[in-house]
Length: 407
Image 1 (tube, rainbow, N blue to C red):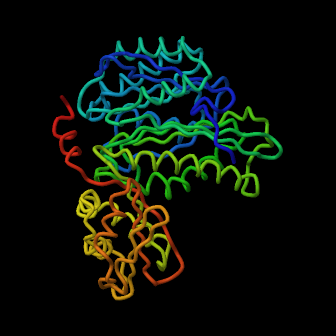
Image 2: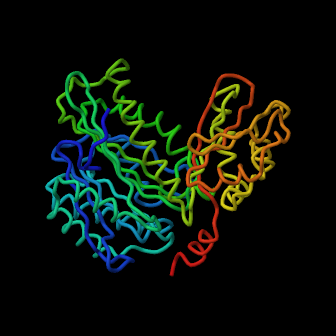
């Protein structure tokens, strides 16, 4: 695998565009479009929140029942969640406008929205934006980057990544963009993620890969414990790379899986590090667990703890918070066997040995916690399974951002 430039435009046949529709923001682009020159097989995962935004309902129907798509239209500023029939009408009319401008079917247009819940979207601005976007599509790193910026809300920077790999003697490209900074919690987050590939892969195998990969990437991040109404991850594959179609498990599927996993993990970690007000990426690796599921639960419990997050922000090696978070995770273990380490770069320090203070030097621990990427390692000494979860510190700015988010 090799990292390349191009984001969602890295794969053959994909174009992108951005546009300032002035839905909520002024002075910046707030709509984006991704388009494939030919229809794609589509796979995806969506929010587990019972309250689902109108675009999520629309996209779920297309992905699960049709499995074919050719375009994505995204707006930021207003989430189109809790908007009733009017919200669904806005989605339908936006898709119709985009389809008409692109010369494709309405049910081949996926819709994404992010922003404030409960507000109605100005449908005329969306429809006009869809037409404007269709007329300015281009395949370039610049267009991909502008689209990644256009879907941001409280994100401090755009999130995109792309790579290429060999599949059956053909070069295959996978690229993506995502947004997410707040209302982020395991089982998806307030994220919109769009990944494109020119690999030839069946709908069934693509969905299999996406459903599996999300478990250890996007579902392993948390910023604030809130699961959004709009979470969407879409992967589109148009087959233009010309590889022999991947229709079953085997070497080709494994190569594709690894590449897609790498793109998803990169984007997931970018979102965790860019949590609202965050100054540090917190990574919790649980090893020595008895089962994979228990390892995931334990790791997510640590990075989801507000007390752990606040302690890391303050460079306070208050290790009781990590042990406590492991203890209330719901997983049964022997606390007298647990070792905990703090790590940053090559500097690793044993903090807890067999469930008690390891006699570390406080100043040394604080220096590790002061880094912008902090790893917490918990060895449970129960078995051979491990998992990693990703989060961020909890700062004063998180409260400031969310205290006046609608204004």
